[in-house]
Image (cartoon, rainbow, N blue to C red):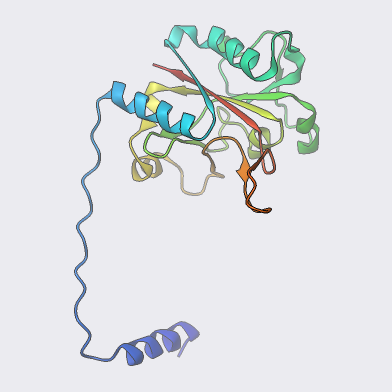
Length: 206
């Protein structure tokens, strides 16, 4: 008998044979929202996490990325201080920014900001999911610089977590971002930037 079987056997003995049956609740139907409402919900939930959302038309992503960096870094920021995931489209990249070329992860901390795309985004929870693919970049890229700018396209937004998981590779190195990095572990005081970027700006195109 394995340890697992032994533990389960003890549980069955403790519960006895006259225990009432338990009704399993039905799985709720997927939440259906029009596309516009889905984007509105994502923007609302992301902002609840103290992140900034800049909405734009798809053609305006490049200009909005620059505005996002202005918002996070202040005007006059140095493009060389922005590192970009290798799969980010050339049109989205600020002129003079640096592509992540696989340099040692510790060197990424010297950059002021990161620009990435996402694998998907969950409207219900305001969560961005990065999967380690070229568009999202490796995990260290989204964790070490102090500012993270993510571009989310309308077609990438799903209502809830099960919908997101259905789109993702289960063995990919997933990073789920719900607002700037924050913790309240010490004296229940909120501190941002402990485990990742202190500032998150989402460019929502659609």
